[in-house]
Image (cartoon, rainbow, N blue to C red; front, side, top):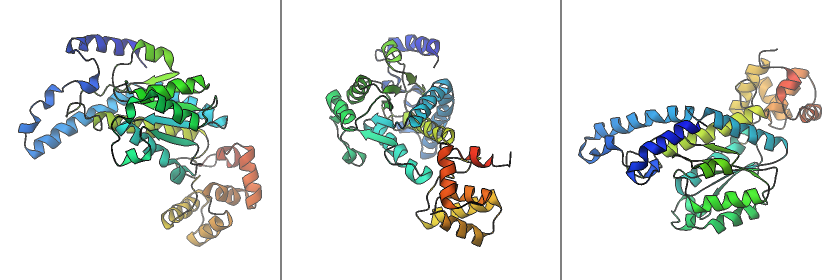
Length: 316
């Protein structure tokens, strides 16, 4: 991340009293209650356009986080997200999407939210104020030196998150912080990586489910997607590590085999069945004309990196 940009921005806003961007008023929306419906839509859309640019400014920090995650996965470690409110919900959402999308073990990426899973549907106000509760969750998951814990707090101040990260570091884990305001020097010095997309004040003051939430979702998507690519769960741009568990995924798996191996639909369906519904195994079986056990062994020997077994998607 770019410290000079963050520092100069903080100094510029210091006259506002609270330097947290998430708590400042947005002058462009100060009369939003007087606008027509279409004007409100246009205003929100104009503000949302700033999000991608703010995330792009953090590209190096995001890449650093990805490298840490990949290293942890290669050490049989895990990725944990810790947050409260919207931040916690987005972490749980991203974690929950990994098993159906990439066939991962649910333990690989986990979301921890203040107040527990009940907080996903009913706000647990006050749960975020306990750093001790955050620490207890880290102990309960037996976090260790092979794991990476990413705290998510748009304002950067949530006690639950700071407590969880402090305990994670005590247990030897690497830690990171994702926020949408100016990070303090202490925050930068404490964690292995800090990601701070500065999306600016929200259209509705303090409503961080909006631009800050969108930025958070973009960052988390990038971290897990790139980590899945780097650990061999993608072939070309196809999600080949999926396990067929429903008709939609069966259709997708068959189409992947039709494209990568050049099979007709019936042959693709038969191959997928013989592979136990695992698309990556089926590709290796079809490409190398070997049985399921041999295909699994070759993938295991290559740490799951299918390109090392069959070459790249285009035959290189």
